[in-house]
Image 1: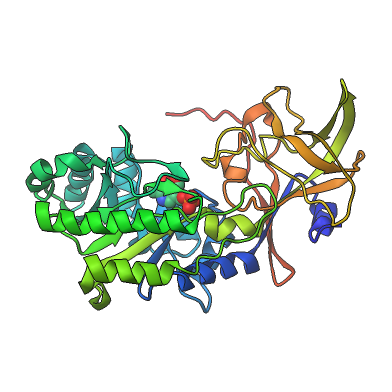
Image 2 (image 1 turned 135 degrees about the vertical axis):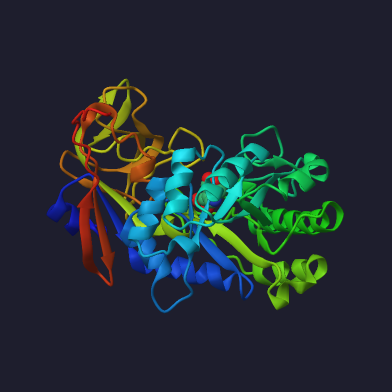
Length: 408
Ligand SMILES: Cc1ncc(COP(=O)(O)O)c(C=O)c1O
């Protein structure tokens, strides 16, 4: 029986369990893998649960800041105890209404993805009588590494094309209501290995230094992005980055030697690395059937509870925990929804299972509940149980009460 089965008995299924001890250990491991002084932004899109986010900000270890890309995530960050001044607001489609709310609530640092995005931020900041500190997200055509989920290097809604910066820099640095303070790179998620991560960082650090030198990019803040990897919805351990810190120090000494004096301020971002390993999804087997020789295990959780929108590809690779030495048979793991798309995993090694048994899908603390098709087919959202030191800290459920409230 898995560690959290008693919680499934107590609170029902489908159920997410977030173990804050894992989350804090991941945060401490990542800070240790980075040079002294690096800021680490937690990407709330991975898991906006306030207790999870709070664990990354509080406690004896170093505190994360918050990377947010909606006013919903801003509310979640503030509820979790982050101050608005600790938030970096990102995203290619910030609306005026969102900017009004974010600036009104005190957010001052924005990653801007285009000249017009910068002008929007500036217009709203000016109306509020404040100056927004903006980092230019750069889309470079010559990436350093080519593994992981690439978000840049081709035509994209993300970032400003690097080759346009020489011409546009004078205009970008004189937009009323804004001050360009640096650069933001987020070129990939889930790097395949440490060497690709280091290769990518070497490339963006060298490029930032060159943009400062050659096109006059102000550089008091440099966010080198993310790419820290984590297993998703299958067994696997937290990745260890033991070369990253000395390699980053070497690269920074080479290209931005002032970094040791705190200029520029350096930052990176992570969602999945920090929270994936702390999350488990428990689901009950509703039915087991055979169809043309293949075994189907039908769970009470499908893509409405574990949607797979992790950026790793639409088809989930979900696996259930199997005890050591337990006999398994390959089959399909599917959900209860009335669509053939409700598949959590094909060709999954499944132990002997019957109706009523509980299975655990590990490594789903990132891109779990809120990356699922929560509203599809009208089932309640899974309950979310937060534990720390083996004790239950909170139990909650996102409300999806099918009420259609009139608007306007
Ligand atoms: C700007 C930005 N920051 C951080 C993240 C988090 O990525 P991950 O969960 O892979 O660390 C993303 C993911 O898409 C992102 O777009």
